[in-house]
Amino acid sequence: MRWADLDFDEGLWTLSDNKTDTPVVLPLSVLALNILQRRAEDSDSEWVLPSRPSHVRNLYPALEKLRKWVGTDDFVIHD
Image (tube, rainbow, N blue to C red; front, side):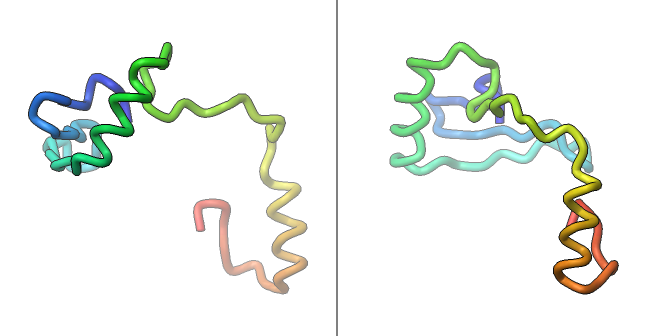
């Protein structure tokens, strides 16, 4: 979610970057708007919830450990 996707005056979130390339407009509750507005005051990012740098660079070793622990190969990282 980018700040540019939010319309605080109308209380809407427009998702324009999606698989169908058709914008989806979602109404936001008063509570959500209040939280987002407070967050916007302190934000210096284009993202509403920016990610933090992570020490994880390669998920495949962890995936292999998880597969062994669970006892199956029938899933991938996306799952």
